[in-house]
Image (cartoon, rainbow, N blue to C red; front, top):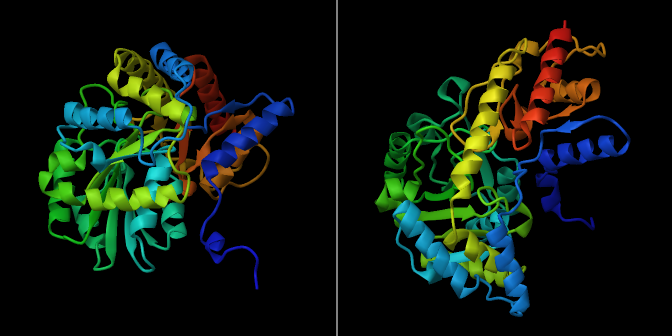
Length: 400
């Protein structure tokens, strides 16, 4: 009898975490490495949010919390959804978890049986299919196209749905592509979902506040109110509020699902960190003035990276609508010989050779289910990004 669970054979380690770790190891050994793998804002958590945490500690808010979140945070979540998304929930329809990852995992654990299918557009965040597999479900990948800015079409969604489909997992703006869906693009998808009453929608809105230009964010239950009773709308404070390490995600949805997720969380981790929850209350209720300022910085970084990558031989880089990632194609370099003498046959070959030759750490697109591409996180300084792009240009020019 094997000691380790069979479920482990269905999953693989996170490629984004692996790249970040490799970059750290190379830096520790003395290499000059620019790490563009981590999906983490380089901004510090705003002072008002940090002060709210300090105040909570000083008040003695250091005890166990209710499984689904402190009442003050659940109330703030209700007000956020009404204010920003036009969605009406009661506090008991909300749940707070240790990051968005726990929200997603609990939703799948609460609903998936063997054979249940979850539709996941590709490219996708690396953890989505692994969560589905760990919870006994079957991920169904639907490839998008670069010429459509990596957005799923209604026709492709329709083709992917079967009687076994339980969830449609949706992420806009997208990690890894940065693609964000307009209201009309979303409406085309929700029209399909209305015809398939067995399919629920799990929407990951983590990058909601990071869209650029005149783009206006929308979420599925807002676009199609008839889907309200079968939509779980997930969000968190990690990205817009630069609170990745605080580990607070949240969601709102139908009460029976929330109760089921609460039951699982009660036997898993119980309530999220008390101090982090009080900080999240201030994040949602306090000033939002820094968000447009940070967005402007991110937008400038995006434009710099897109421009410089499109000047690299063999690279084609679309300009995304949101998040802080670009997802360029390196198809023009496949079959070329790297400066080391290795012939690059895959995007993983490309990113490995780039790291070894120029010290730039990025993530290969096949880890996100669609290649030959690679993901760059531009959540770092313009100086670092400019230097990294110069190195990429130099590497590509040296490939024969």
